[in-house]
Image (cartoon, rainbow, N blue to C red; front, side, top):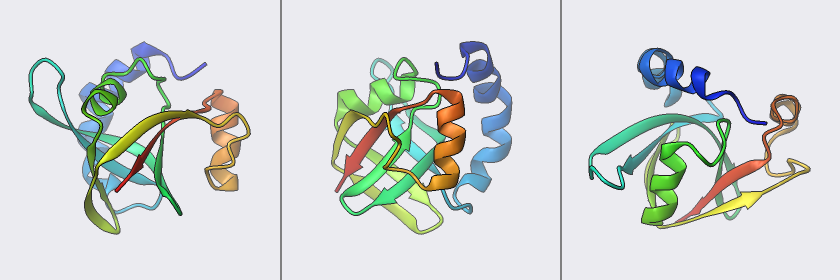
Length: 124
């Protein structure tokens, strides 16, 4: 079970505003740019992101019911900012990885403890 919604609300209002600027300077973190499905407003969400040969995977630590994955999957694209730079990824889809082979070993341990096995896969 992903992290509780109550924690997500707190993080969105408090933690994301403080840690968001640091996300683009830290490996395994980044910012996802996405437009609201109804509002059309651009939002930037701090995420756990991992480069793989085919593109990037972004952990759904709050599950697929969060707004940012819904926005990204509906749009089919996203903007990504990491310590490596900024890029636009033109394809997205939801993937399950029960064995967590898409992420580095230290991260597997944390995601396994949180019971997170869903990701947004994004590619150029």
